[in-house]
Image (tube, rainbow, N blue to C red):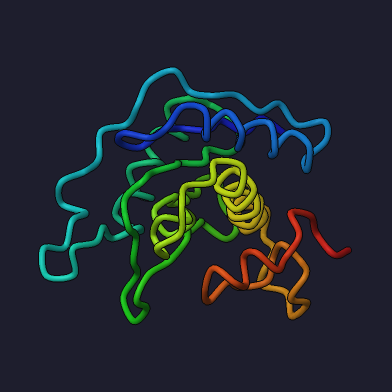
Length: 168
């Protein structure tokens, strides 16, 4: 399997490299690459009232990269706050099953919760959410085990509690 990590908008390159390494550790045998170009954030994804970006709108643009690149999976990484209808926010979204996914670093940052910056913790959280969303592209649903990476994170505590690997 070949997984390409695509930056969407302005994203810290070191964090993205950490995600790339983490994906290769969990999906042993996979080729994990960083896409050289940065995808421009689609303006129509922004909701002025919510001050957030609609993840499904961005995901549809990522699908275009999948079709043109010939890779197995594309994981978009952005630093903007994402949402889907009926939820306050999402850490990410994916086609399930499919070939495209996106995660946001916004609410994975310690600073979002009033704490000091912690790049190690940010990468750890980001890898968990990246593995979770790539798992969805492979057809995996949510798991009831709060330690499994496929457990649905309602909040950052759920993300911190779970591991970066699958339970089975």
